Image 1: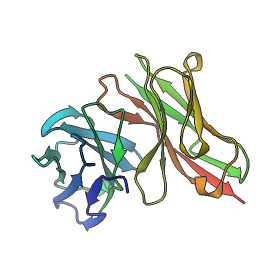
Image 2 (image 1 turned 90 degrees about the horizontal axis):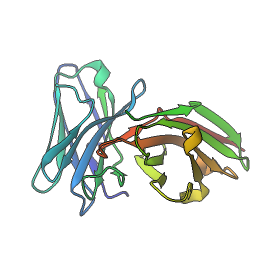
Image 3 (image 1 turned 60 degrees about the vertical axis):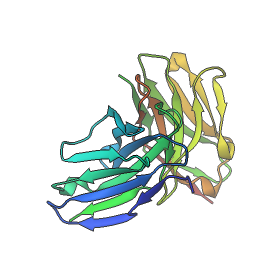
Image 4 (image 1 turned 90 degrees about the vertical axis):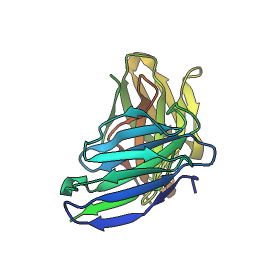
Length: 113
Length: 113
């Protein structure tokens, strides 16, 4: 157990729908990162939050959004889902703003039918 | 911009044989380099990292990697493979801003008895 908790582990939904993925960082960590892992794109950085504020943005689609709450948990919202959004979504956390000490969760597998 | 190339999407070795997984990087600044391992249905686990100092880095489970600036390489090795080493391995470089890891496409290691 890495200490980073992601829910749900698996999610199946239909095109056009909206889902929310949740992440609780490791105790004491202030930063949360979201990554998407797909067969064609590999591991892609989506977005980072630090202590409630957006810190860095990667290849995140406009249909996707995220936020980090005062208790430091984070949610990734995916809307108007397409077949190509099917992927494994990882959350990682780190103690501060640097990504050189990342701890990953087990991931949420999203299947869009 | 930083990037990582992993040579060989699939490597097969026999139990007890040398493991060599290749990684080349591109970076406009002195790189911070990482190797992560992903076991089936699990998140990514840090094997080892290079930041500064000694170029030969030892990690968990008997793995090590050597940073070679002249070759822009950070290959991962293990003298003797175990069946339990079968997994997917990712090389990564820290982006220039220090806000995210940029991953290679990954190499799947198979170990046969």
